[in-house]
Image 1 (cartoon, rainbow, N blue to C red):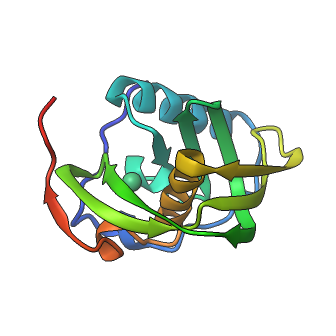
Image 2: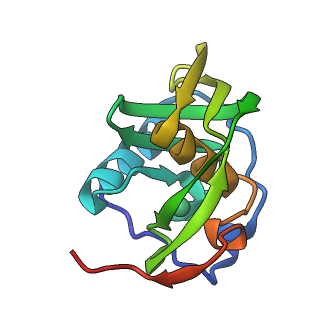
Length: 152
Ligand code: CO
């Protein structure tokens, strides 16, 4: 089901989200909704609090593919990149954000199985942006500037 994306100003975006503890049908339904909403919005990533659910789950859709990360945690972050970023919860804006260029995370999938993954470039940026959401942090907190997004 396509869900409404919560906009900046809503307190759910500022919460520290709770770990996912149950890997059952309600988590699958949540991730299905997040995926459907992300594809509908044509975004690069979406975190559960962005649809009003304060749990540690994110979905990412980038060149490397579509990914679901449950309870993701950084193992390390390396290097640096500076580039433009936007957010489905901050409509019509973009900003320039400094991020690590390469990251390694550990996470669980929707069944609770554990994996690790190394990402670089835009994929790493998307992961950093989405993991920030789980701690109530938005890119506008970190951006060097926030400006009107160009219309396409
Ligand atoms: Co965002």
